[in-house]
Amino acid sequence: MLPVVACLLLAAAGHASGSPRTVTLGAANYNTLLVSDQRVGGTTFALLKTHDLKPILANNYEVGKEFFAVVITDFFPPSTSSIARLAQDSKGRLSVTGLKNVDWSAWGGIWLPCSGDVLRLSKDKSVIMVGEEYECNARHIASAASLVELRSAFESDPYYYGYADVVNFMRYFGKYPFANNLSLPAVTIEDIKTHFNPYMYGYITALELSKGGKYKTSKYMTMGRCSHEFGYIMPDRQTVYLSDDHGSGGALFKFVADKATDFNSGKLYAMKALQTSPAKGPANESAFDVEWVLLGSSSNAALLKAAKATTFLDIFEVAKGDKVAGTCPAGFSPVNTATGFECLKLKAGMATHAAFFESRRYAALMGATTEWSKAEGMAYDSASGSLYLTMSVVRYGMEDFAKRGSASTSYDAGGPNHVKVKYNVCGCIYKLTVDKSTYSATHMAAAKCGQALPALDAAGNTCDTTSIASPDNVDIVDGQLIIAEDSEGLHVKSQLWAMDLKTGDLTRIFTMPTNATLATAEFTSSYAYTLGDYRYLVANVNNWDFNQRIPGRVGYFGPYKKSDTLRFGPEASAPTSTTGRRRASLLAASDEMLAAEASRGRGDKSLERGWPEFLANSADL
Image 1 (spheres, one colour):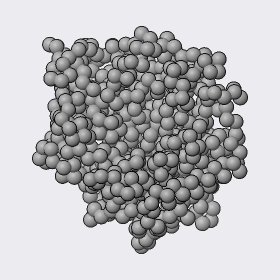
Image 2 (image 1 turned 90 degrees about the vertical axis):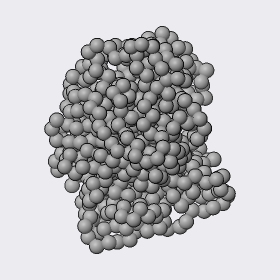
Image 3 (image 1 turned 90 degrees about the horizontal axis):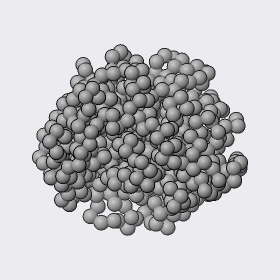
Image 4 (image 1 turned 30 degrees about the vertical axis):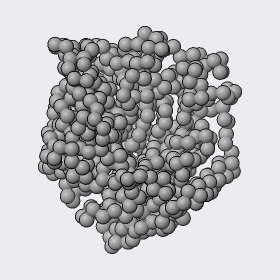
């Protein structure tokens, strides 16, 4: 199976200040560094392993000067990350000369890593911070007495698909959901309660990378537990903004360390939004004043110790309430978050536990806003003091008692209903105004939103292709916001954009050669890095149609001279508009990828390298 490539993070970053140079992106200057299943020096890229470093077995098979890049693979857990050693030739071109997979066993493995930021500590040491998204609902793990109960509980969640995540993660501990196919140890509820502690997952992970490729792993529990997409480090190297990538009912967080560059202790805040634009107005006019609610202060050492001895039922009492009226029995408080409507009572002495292990629920109890939808990447423009944040869709909790424009109580009952904006399936980019003296955001307003078409166009697009759809990760390059789409079919072909930060004008700089009916390959990350005397725009390709065996890809546009100030022009060729041409384009790209794989050798197919195959064997669960 072929994993999804979520993120490539290079171990150095920088900015240019020379004369402007207009560059045009195209397939000819996209350079692939790694492809799923590729072997480098005896190491297989994205090979999944158990906690004791044995290969995870796949269903239905027999058992059988230093530059670095950290590559994250994002698929159903257990997930993995890798460190690639890079060589740079005289013209700035990069190649992979060494590869090793990161051992996360000290932290119980890694859960759905997504995207992140790089903190440079010295010329020989950097910390790569990556979020674990779609954290497991710990309430179900604590309450269920059987696998049947556990599955039923997860299926009742409005957004979670956590049952499949949990039982597949148990492969990390040598327990298999498809055991009857291979005569392997079958996962039980007792195994889950013994080995799988939900309060060990859902954090910003930290990989400290030093000279020679040596590394240390950690997780910053101090930054709270949620569906972390991204932790963006501000210029003071003390403040970190945290986006909660959930379908709805998400929060936005801010962490302030006690000491710059040391994120092992500090304070965690949640945003409270006060809408200043008209209620039920269009998303592209939405605006809010911002307040920050203090959730708590703690240290990683204290939280790690507490996590090992705490369950959800140690933190909260739960009662049944009226989810339509949004009311609870006396003594219980209503909340409406990513886990839906709940009636909760905080147990005595558990405020710190709630703040860091149940950050979203506790934020709701404390009056913060838990109505955001799919908060994704961030990038800070120091010139204007603006932090750009993407929301890949505006829906549900962000609406006013509505679901995709139709009346619904599901997402606002029991909550404060701070956000009242019209549904926008194409998503928005918000600009947060930041106080440069404190790096605290004070205001938030839409900077750019996509535009839904009245009906699908001839090519099958839901959103107008002259603007964004499902914006994901972003970066700032010489006064331009580079925007990668994770369009999921809203644009049949995901697109890469450059937005001029002074004018707001958009330029489409690249279009993926793909067709949603065959594979949804997407640029979900785009970051600019400087290594030595050259600059690179990293763009990684995700693939979600594993039946086609089209691999995820890690690569970059460039190289460009460090002294150049880059201006991205329109893409080399406009996207084709006919289905036949899109299909032919994808098939050609697929054939090239598969031919390259064949020339390298596929390796042993008995090993799991990506999306777990439980979907074809759901009866086994």
